[in-house]
Length: 184
Image (cartoon, rainbow, N blue to C red; front, top):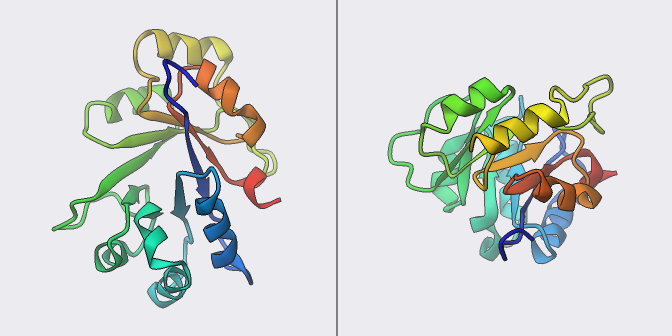
């Protein structure tokens, strides 16, 4: 906790579907996880919709889609996440919008926009992507924090574990996005 605020905890789905996934997502949302990013690159709209329909409707307002944004509108989801595959906010979208950044310079540019939050990665060596190393030194991250580039609107991604949430908060991030540690 920093200044009385708890860090936001976000879990990102594995890229592939698996048996019992909706139940696991439900468990996360009924626990300490604030939001779930549904990231299924290459998945068909119908596959993503099938997963959404297995999640209790009362929890869908805590889901963010990386693809098939029309489903976010149809099911009243929390948000959409812009990335290299999907760079634009669909017409009529009124919910949260987040975005990925992979450098401090890119993050500084994105901070000029009105995103609800922005992920910066990779902060640590990846758990889920072998050979995907941290892109930043502690000094670079501290300098970005001091300049106000890293703040409560920025969440750390890449090698983040549940055990590192305290460290992420100390580094000035508003939260953590967890992939590998969540599904191991």
